[in-house]
Length: 495
Image (cartoon, rainbow, N blue to C red; front, top):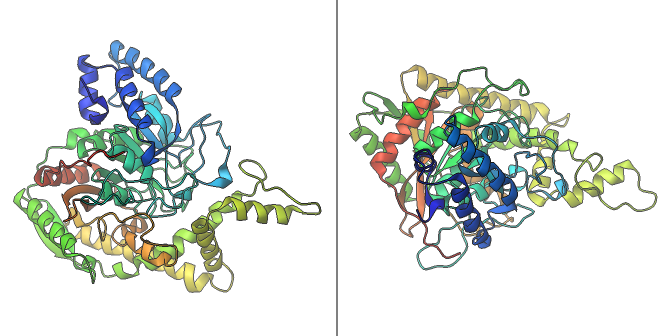
């Protein structure tokens, strides 16, 4: 079999079980693809020795007949996940040289299931960004191009390296994290599937924190079936994470029947934004028609507090970030600035943070510190928390009325060029999260499914939002949408 790196998880798993291919062969195919794709800047710490060692162990395990679904499958790990003995920098200069002595719960669960780690993937610094342009490693680049234009495009953010690597077939799947859309937006930009599970479904232990009440890990895969397979391995209760839910993890793959007859799908009127491109409007309408044709009932719904979601998110997330990032001080690990004679501990903190944090992280830390300060706490942070409660209640009311899932666009546009949204106006970049942040604020599961191409040949995605803890049902609705959309486009290889 040639081009083994182009397989999805389900296909590769079945080929491994039949003995048509070995994990070592799969892994070598991916390692070669990674080495040939430096132009994408997706993999930033390659771990070929670990990969081949795990692949050999997986082959033995498969021969023994006790292998779980993920056994022997080569994947990439976002640089936000701590991986024992392997640089884990969260794409920041301040964590230069940091090699953890422990493994994050999610990456450990994948390793225990026999998954093969190919290396660490590029991302926005501390997961703060929507375009993967804030990384200490430089920009991750999308494998897609606009027609005959060879301008480099963003693979989205913050999980841009994960998105680029999966879309370019450098790995079979990858881990991502989602604080305000960082799995779903990049998945939509590169034409793959990405699911953010319910808050608390996956352990956050060992994942570098951005905003602790919003962060959630999830898989980024080539299709919905693969997302179901990988998500099951990533989920589960973890005593080390106090926000982790003690709930049984169902067999998500077994729930993929494609039958959604009688399901009620809500279309929120508040997501019809002024200036939304006609292509996004059409894609959304087409998606609703596809679900209707599959037997679902389409109903109009209202989520009245949607318009306050972005402002509330950009108060809560920076506030939590400023609190979480206070621990990076140059004392115990990571980078420490060179000090001048007479410098004290305050100067060390100041110099280390000024050197170690990039502009976007500095901006968010300052915003967060401001909204948490004594005079402004009630005016900003407490008010944002109240708005968050109202947004959550909007969703609860809709689900209580019998709606099973909500269909929205995943992004307000297709992928844009690197450097096109400059630092001069960060708010323009923040508006990219307009359809995704509500899901994090309410702690709900959301999935992005590729559903079409724009007139320049770039992928566009649709988002489905599900009831809390009902990822299986959400994946099944996404499976029906995927089958109806029939999206099979791949980027032309230029790298």
